[in-house]
Length: 100
Image 1 (cartoon, helix red, strand yellow):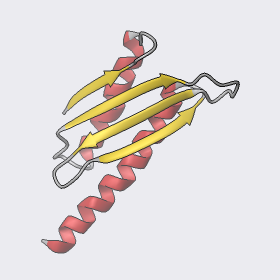
Image 2 (cartoon, rainbow, N blue to C red):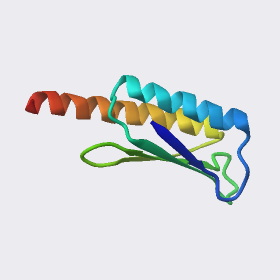
Image 3 (tube, helix red, strand yellow):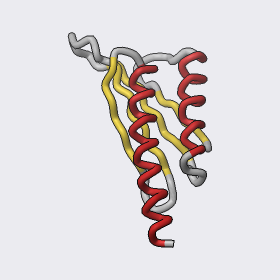
Image 4 (cartoon, rainbow, N blue to C red):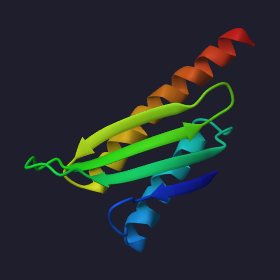
């Protein structure tokens, strides 16, 4: 799976990019037909502590999955997104099995 990380208003360090790649690669254990993942990291201009926005678009056959989370850190946001995507991928796989 190709992972494309976009950070419009800051430069992400290598550790963060590696962390995101590692987390997303685990999704392939649940669904092996992921084409690519677009990850958007944004810092919200707000007084809230949870000002990091993580948006992940997973491209898979039959329609894309999109998840967006706000968190204190990009790592925490990525974790939440990946957990949500994992559930969605498992559901999709079950549906496909039911129709097979």
